[in-house]
Image (cartoon, rainbow, N blue to C red; front, side, top):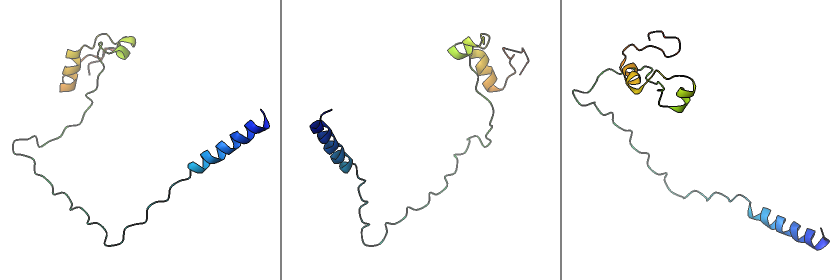
Length: 99
């Protein structure tokens, strides 16, 4: 690399680094702070809505999904997955246990 090219490259690098300086944050405005929002009021559930929440495992790969198919899960079709999600007993595709 020639001396002129090296000097030019150095100058460009210095100018580029100077443009990357972090900008200073603007000074806060004088005066009172902005008002805080009012806390949200709890909303009652409409009558007739479910009053109990049930948590459970409703995740099941079917034979339609490529990852389950590659793992030889070819017995769990979408109907089986739906039965499992509803809580009905199904037969596990690998160890044939009733779950």
